Structures are given as C-alpha cells and as structure tokens.
Length: 358
Image (tube, rainbow, N blue to C red; front, side, top):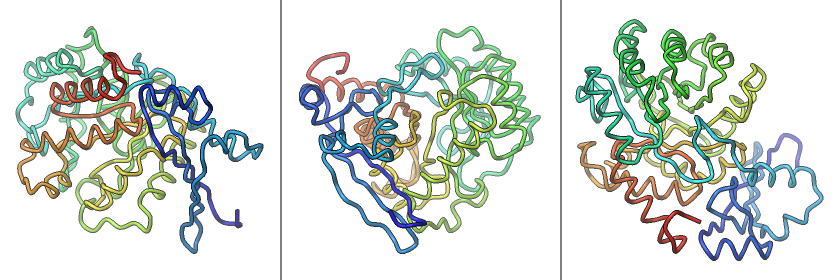
C-alpha cells in the first residue's frame, strides 16, 4: 500500500439459505456480521490521491492470509453484532417512523397530536416494527430548525406515554435538550441525524446515558443540504466520515457495541449519490457496527419512478429496503411497516427455503 493511501474491504458474492450454509461449512464463505447473509468474495479497494484501484479475492484465499490488515478487516466483517436496544442484530429488523410534526415531507400533520402519535406507534409495532422512532423536527430538504422548546412539547408527551410500551422506542433528534429529556423519559436509543455533532453536549449526553446511538452522515444542514451536494467518491467519503465519528464516540466513552451507523440516504446527496450508496452498502460492514438505512419514500425513489407524491412511493420504498436487506443491513427505517414486514418476511422465507430465516 502506497503512503497516503487507504484500503477498504467490501464483501461481495452474497448468498443466503442452503447455499450460504454449504459455502460456510466448506470454508468458501463467512457469515456477514454474524447474520443470515454470507459473502464468498471481497473487493479490496486502494484509494489515494490518484484515484481508486481494486482487486477481487475469494474469501477462501483471504481467510488463509497472515497479513494483520487483512485479518483485522475480516474480523470486522464477520464479528456478530451485539444487541441494540434489546434487539438481535443477527437479522434485519424494522424501525417504524412516527413524526410528531406538522411539516414532515411524507406524513406531516397526521400524528402531530400526542394521542394520535401514541396510537400510531402501537399500530406500527403490531404491524411488524421491532422499534419505533419518534421525531419532533422535520429534517426534510429545506426544513427550518425548530426551537428546542417546541420540539420538546411535541415529543415528550409521546415518549412518556410510551415509557411502559412492550417495545423499544428511539428519539430522532439533534438537540441536547431533547436528547437529555428523552433519556429521562426512558427511551432505548438515540437517533441523531448530525452524528452527535450538532451540539458539543450531544456527545456527553449520549456517553452518560449508556444508550445505543445512531450516527448518521449528512452533508450540510436540512436547510441547504440539497442545494449542490458534491463528492469525489461518495461511498468512501461517507465511510470515512462515519469511521471518524465512531472513533470520536469511542474516545468520548461510547463503546463500539452501542453504535449504529446510517449513511444518510437523501441527506446532502443527489439521486446518483444515493444509488451508489445503496448499491455499495455492504462496504459499511467494515466499520464493525450495525447499519441502519432510511430510504423510505425518499425523493430519489420519486425521481426513478416519476412519482412526485411521497405516499405513492411505497413499492419503490420496499424495493430499496429489500436491496438493503440483501446486503445484510440490520435496521430498516420505514413508514410503510406492514407492507415492508410482509415483503421482508416473504423474501427471507424464499431465500432460505423456510419460515423464520436461515
């Protein structure tokens, strides 16, 4: 490796079911992140100031390597992920979205009142969501920042009403006041679109809470992020950013076992950027933590299918979710929970040849 270059390891040749079990048994493959998808091939990417080069190596060859860099990379790719908010990360789980807002891009105003939001959370859990994500500030493109007091007034009654719910609840916020109040209200996960960078207090609150955190990548703020997003190599730049934020969290006292990453589909990305990230998702397993994807009803889907109305993008959203699941993503954040659960359950049964997964 040249000085100033960096290596990335992207698992490919992904298989499930009986084929995966046989390949693993014969040492031709390994389970990706201890889950239900196995990889038989690895793309080793060398990125430096001159550009990107890559080679493809069978897992069976790499597994015999004595090179420390290779062995560490394979260790991160294959290590089972710890439970997050009580949920097993050995399979794909669904996170249901409840926006307690008047202006979210897809469902703004539908659940702005606490009773409706609480009822919606329980409905989504019954429909198949393993965890419910509560948010009180729209982060759609062009959205304006909501004062912390107003955001608290929106979400706190909902969080308190769900404090004894038989399912984990996460708070979707980037403000320290909201995160701190949510911790006191008993939430199970902190989901921050700023990767704990919006305010210096966020990192301290997350570290002291002992809760798992979702670190999301975004280029710019919601107000301006879609003006002119630009990258040289979006897949590797997003990876590098999330890797650095993981390291920052560990330095602040947040164990790796408490961290989930989110590449931030639609947050400062063009349609082409989003597609490149989604097609290359397996790369992010190299960070050694669970992956969350939130592609539900996003604008890039509307562009692909010529559908300007977010609520009419359900089939495209499910397709994006299944593409993520096929790459071993552990959490799917979505609006259409029942439909996504049906698709995921059926897809897993078809891939493994039996109900209940591999």
